[in-house]
Length: 204
Image (tube, rainbow, N blue to C red; front, side, top):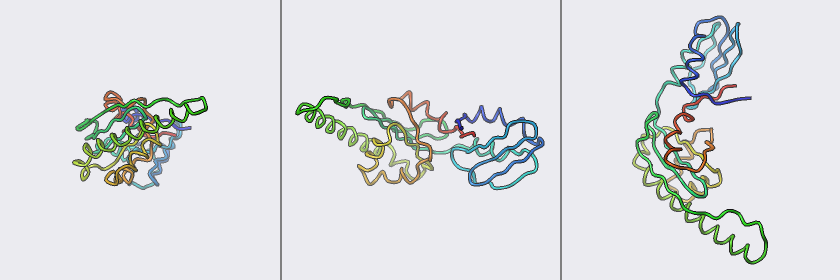
């Protein structure tokens, strides 16, 4: 069972263990911490971990140094109904744009009215995808050379549709973090709160 823990909470939890009796293994982007007196943990930092080593004590300094590092991250959050696009320098939102467009919910009845409803819904969804893709290109292209990682979230199929809509967004998929961010309806407030999740590590 795993959970995601914010970097400040993780730092508070792990810092007191530095140098204590136990074993620590760094490798394949994961840190395995086995204190003699305490619970064993495996920690996967959100942006990877190049450090590889084995220690005959608890050594968390390389991990804490990694999770304290700031990164430039592009964010693309899409649901059928809205989108949020942004760029973060560390935890600071430096560029953003959000928007919404009505998309009808699914129709449960059959018949010709259901077909009309389905066509209308598809048209609305297509319009949202096209608008979100255009906005994403406008907001993110100026940052393309500086962005290290991309955070994708919302609804997977909607995100895939937006990325497929424009070839000049393909670089986002190439830099996408492994974690897909399940967020509620994309709004400015949701985007502003994203850094907590961005910098959270997976702890097993």
